[in-house]
Length: 233
Image (cartoon, rainbow, N blue to C red):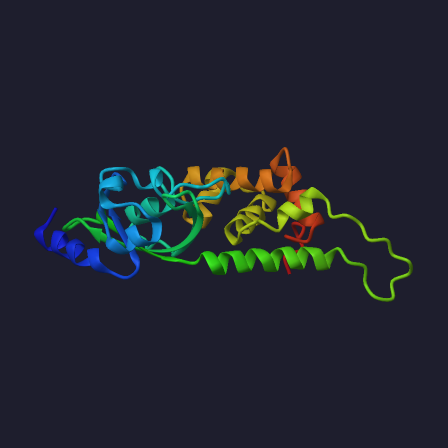
């Protein structure tokens, strides 16, 4: 590692926000005091481990932090990875949400990353508030409208309840499926890896209770999440 890069990483150790850096193989090479304060792991707990072994998905099924993740894929293509919000757990096991910004330090005369710096902050309260709003919206949607002729309230189906959990990226993937795109074509359109596209599709199937991509598209149209093909306007 270049001396200037090593010096920069040392300067990031004392930031208020959490900071960790990984090498091109996703192994953690820096874990700041802010990261220790937020997630509870000391540098000795995590340095040398791969990042997705630490920033784990606590069961939400939509964790962008994984082997050969989208951040690494976009970085190697010379792009700028978007800021992400992801669920994880603290060392003590508490559910947590992080908003992560990524900064790439390239190799000299190359687009390949020498290190990728992740700057993160706690957005757990905001994420919980958004979840509460979604639940309230779902509840209000199931109430009969005033003045409706003896309308009987209907229990929301499991499919409708789960569909509210679709993320903006999953909705974008669902629209791609409605356009008839395959996994590789979706990856190309969204500038993500094939494995990430495949993970999004599986998450959509699970959340919509669908057994196939066609069923997922039909469920999305039925629930107003997407428009039927040919009715994009």
